[in-house]
Image 1 (tube, rainbow, N blue to C red):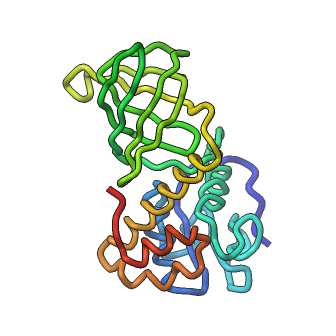
Image 2: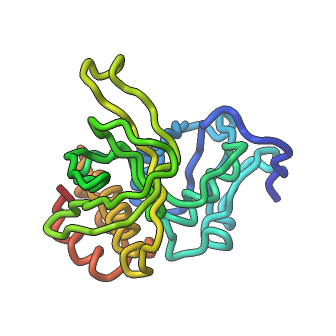
Length: 232
């Protein structure tokens, strides 16, 4: 068995061995997107991702691919959350993505143009020219391809970003409230599709299509991925 993890891991070096080379490469690309570094030597890794029946260094902590909490077909959400629990003292429980999506913010009887900094199915950080106050309620109109989601939310933090960007700008942390299960599923699907689209469009990514059979992907998302079209 793997050695138990007695503390939060600090170095994000991972070694991946699923038994399928295309899946190893796909996971490697995705993990790089999430801020992890893939190493070729398992002895250099702080955590192993390995199919249970394969050989691995017993002295290393790891996650078995193919059994709970990461059974096949593999859910990116489950894997993301499991890694969060291993590497962060305050693990986040909702998969997020750093991506700029167009957003309109309706607040104080005004509408402001903005864009996402990062987003989950439960909330987002949105850039905006208007300084809001913690606790304010607002509406966010989020553009996902040809679809626009209307989401109600509450401001949970405000960060001044003028010094970074060079113009009046604020990052507004928003917690979505009153979102339907369908809206949340739409957001999760968009996040998963975007990550996988990025991987498939990376250099050599076309060879990773076969690895999708090992992933738990909503049918509508899988159909779009087969056409290798990005979300914009």
